[in-house]
Length: 388
Length: 142
Image (cartoon, rainbow over all chains, first blue to last red; front, side):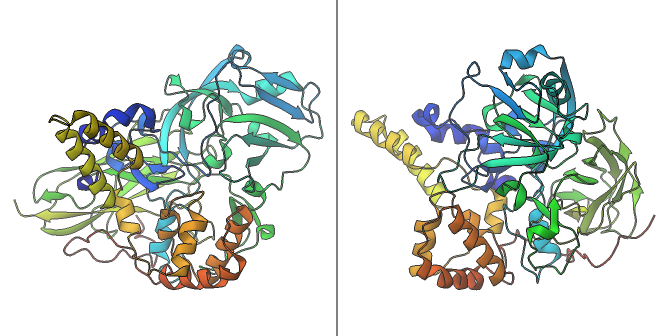
């Protein structure tokens, strides 16, 4: 993996005089490109493993359409309307006037791991979409105003049950549906659902939704609308494309490879229990008798959190409990670590299996679904053990 | 590979700029930089895509009708059945792809043939003795 990535200095040298005009959204040389355009860039495992909180410059970027034209912070407004007593048009200053709440939270693309469905169900049609592996996830400190505080100011009518949220993702063609997402009001009223203006202590970067994005912790990231400008409270959920057709999960799991109509599906919402191994790197070489530190992260969704991680170094034959790090909060991930001393030369498969406080355990493979969503199959890393 | 060559060209031009024709070399270097999409191919990408699609009307259709909105890796990385390709192409035309209606069936057949579920991804080299990962059943209980 490392050999395919440009060194940072080499990459910047190649850009030369053009660097100023190119304005890449991230430390491109450090990331894995899932799709070149629109930007779908994943964070490599070794980069994720460096810190509990994923730095802004290498946090994964998912784009349906391109980012919108630059919005100067002082002209941005959030319109809150629909089934409210007093529609609001909030500026950044207005939003900052509400109490600031920080939520450490995983943000994970609904399609993270989608490519693994192709591995797990090789004869069936692979689910269509950006072929993420492990890179469509990160952990950050998100800070902003609670949505419930904003909605309290607007005065929510009793007939309101959903919000239709609009993000300024910018399609190339006018016929491509805009990014309109419907969500249950109940989840918006959760104390940790926030309108974010700071990411890891810095102003929300442009490609992560500047000036303001939604954060719906514990749910798939499609709910966490970037470049948000409108929240319209409604009685029924919107049927706009990216809610009515996109991001849906079958009500009943069917045959792998077979499409399912949206009307017998429901929106993907909660994330599930999951873990990733950030060290050792896949295909790395280790020695018999030399201790190897197996590191990674574990989390869950819907307000549940990881409480145990078992690690196998023999392809799943036997498992040992790893040591968990402190949890920064129920929506964030926590570290796990286990020291393994290889005993025999050959290939070794390291696997990690997380369990959460509700008793959910990672499966070997998640149920095939046409969107390839919420993959949480056990992650494995193959290493080569050689004699000392 | 193409991207590597292009970036190499930029570096070569930059190196040559130290000689007599500084102005020209700098201008050429700037032009090349502007023309190159300065994003390295990732290891993941190399292992997923990399299929050489045969030239012909279907490929030109894909290149002209699909790359208006997204790069070619969006289709190179898929491995869909024919009905799923049909659904995707239909959706893309609703999104505004100018794929000619008369070419739709041929393009779907082409995608299903060259980017169907049995077409291998170019996999990262396996380790010497690693067995295939088994998804057959639950892991051994603790």
